[in-house]
Image 1 (cartoon, rainbow, N blue to C red):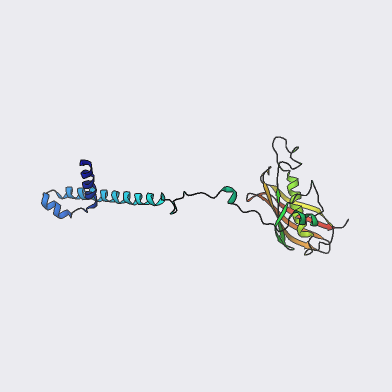
Image 2 (spheres, rainbow, N blue to C red):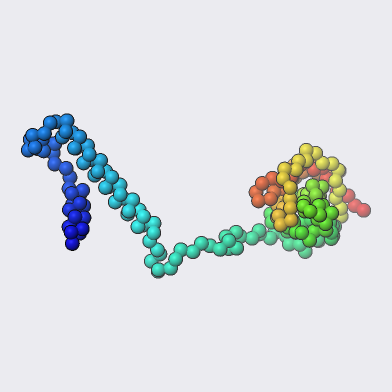
Length: 231
């Protein structure tokens, strides 16, 4: 009972605003400097009490549960990220490109702008036939195969009717400014974009620019010169 009376009196004293300085000084006949000090102390205690109440309110708001009483659940990681779209599946790619296992390095086309660009993906897995030898203790996708995969995405652009793709094959005529930024390992998804920069239809030669990404970071890039031709 005594503790309850003490706590009520404590909080009631904190909630009451301090009396004016001139009245307290007149009643107590205290020096002016002492009145000023007491006023500052009371003002500070009032600020601290106000901040404590606001903090308590914020804590109560943050710790409240949903109205239905259920606990807050995070979206499972397998449901957070949408799958890549499919513009061309592997069957359509096989109709366009002459490559076959083990050298077909494009699994899906996720964007295609006729006569302009294409974006393809290559799912890099430990079952790829180049990993046993490159390297047995640290599987890394060979850089030359990243360049080849980019070229195949470029071939999908070149062998379409919008570019004059009535011919059966395309070949490397040159590569320039190729850079490898990061290693690509088993489990990565290689996302490759090829843009057509210049096309000479008369000679069947095209200049293209390509970049390959893993997780949004560039891992390989370069300039490609491609030539179309029949057997």
